[in-house]
Amino acid sequence: MIFSSPEFFIFFAIYLLFHFLAPIKYRVPLIILGSAFFYGYHRWEYAALPFALIGFAYVGALIISQQESEPVRKRRLAATIALLLLPLLFYKYADFLYLSLVAPLISAKDPLVNLPLPLGISFITFTLISYVVDVYKNKFPVERNFSVLSAYILFFPQLIAGPILKPHELIPQLENPGSARKGAFMYGAAVFTFGLVKKMVFADSIALFVDSVYKAAPGSLGTLDYVTAIYGFPLQIYCDFSGYTDMALGLGYILGVTLPNNFSRPYVATSLIDFWRRWHITLSFWLRDYLYIPLGGNRRGFPKEVRNILITMTLGGLWHGASWTFIAWGALHGIGIVISHIVKKGALGRVVERIPKWVKILITFHIVTLLWVFFRARDFQTVYNIISGVFTTSLGDMPTFLTNNGFYLFIILMFYITHAFDDHAHIFYFIHKVPRALVWGVLLIIVAMCFALGGGNSAAFIYFDF
Image (tube, rainbow, N blue to C red; front, side, top):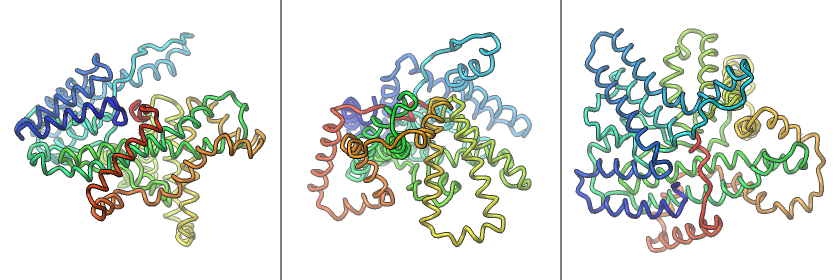
């Protein structure tokens, strides 16, 4: 059940009815029950897993908070984090490690575990680690109400693919809920619809073309196909993931909960450093606060800062998927960030400052776009096929290509033209300047058009696999 499916609309309508009718004191139990159903709808055999992880974190935070000895607190923190990471390592990385390290030694080819990945296990694990570490650092008081902690983790708008929430960003809102009528219903519906358009009109549409190119036999397509796929995937991954985030934020507004935004027009970034301040913002903050800074950050000299950046970004790539291409994607971003720091600190920094902003945006965008090939490709051979295909295949019949793929090219063009205006401020302005009846009419028409374009269905979100 995904946000862009008819099943979810039915689920949310029923949930919203209970949300309005139930007394405030039942708000947390309602979140837990509704979210458990939402999570279990995909695979009921995994329905207990989030509760087990919550139990580990609940007990771990309690025993950490009861101890004053710093060495003992550290050991308890390490043990709790290890328990939280075990399911993630088992389901997501066991086969990768086995096939990469062990299988070649024993001439094995079959995976060791070969189990489907539980939905949202990476996001759930990272959110729980945030809670436990913040309790350890005395940044947040230990939560003694298991129900509140469960609602914080299971809150279904952000359960599957974030944003990754720190405890202070949601728990206080759950402990002190407002009246159901105070939810920003129209604004939430508008933000949700904005995300729905990104997902169903842009991401799902261009995915058809991108997937066909990445799955095609090497050299079987022309230069224009490869170029279009390379420029199309940045659109797909952004509209898919930021579309999910917009829908999650919209649902939160409707339910009276404010969630942090996860994107800030990343393709107008002027450097890779700037890009990671705009892309998957809550993950960037998580990696900074719970990995980069504990490693030492930039406090112990530039060589160790370089080491810490490369470790953080490489592990960030590995977090995205159990594949060498994800590791390469993260490591290459790390190298790019290091180079940006070197340039900024050196004599070239003054030269770079004089480069027009639009040039820096263009250069950064093309570096990010090239690196997305590693993210999308299933292996390094595919990376080579896609990049080399731009230079080693023929241009082909351009009029025929334009005729057959005009819609995809139009989608790509429209996205890049409008990306600089992609923020919720424009939505807020729209709903406050236009009569309410007209706003609702426009939103209903847009939703109907989205489902008509998608034939009543939508592809699963890319980050559901992470």
